[in-house]
Length: 264
DNA sequence: TTTATTTGACCCTC
DNA sequence: GAGGGTCAAATAAA
Image 1 (cartoon, rainbow, N blue to C red):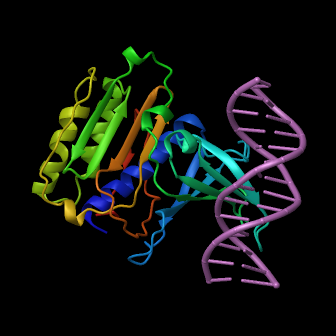
Image 2 (image 1 turned 180 degrees about the vertical axis):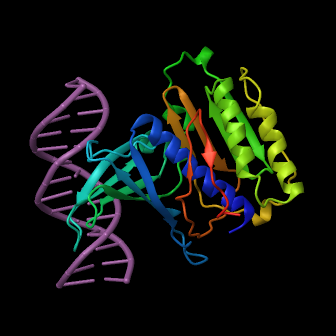
């Protein structure tokens, strides 16, 4: 896994934890694996799997608010499985032609764990899926492009949140990242997240040198907490298979801690 | 009335 | 032929 893959994988999990810690607490991410990409020439939608653990008190039938709007279109009893598998597609399929789908399967071994298999990338507009409790004029968003490979987009983070996020990025990059990479990675992020939010969008494009060794699936990452939202998505979308441990950090909007020593 | 969910049937792949 | 995935009519909920 390349340096940038680690960054995005780390960030994705962080977003998930931020999302669930702040909206459906308590909920723990227990693991994630990405399926290997299909053989060359075979036209198959990107596919990856996550496992989500829910607390006993949660509504277990619909525990998976991942920021997108899904519509259930089927349910099947699966051979050898205790629980049926639910089939969901993006609610914007008809309007915007978004082909993203997901399958939700409850674990036999631990009913508090749901395995979610995502297929295809969302092509619907991200904004239409974001919660918008604020009036549009009050909404603030900022966008960072990192090496033209990774976009970070924030919605309605106040100055405190942005400072926290800058700290997160700093801690993410303090262990083994090479000095020149660290400089490239951190400078624009700190410029953006370390300053008070302003209206409009800030766009950075940095060091377009490592695009080719930067590959992720057709992922789009989203976390929400009340009126706050953070999303990230790869600009390029070459698919890559990866396995990656995700147990080593905690994150929330105001108190960010992150142990990345095992990642770099 | 509109929108979402359920569920049996059908289709496709292995 | 078996099993997984999707369709679509029926039903429920808002």
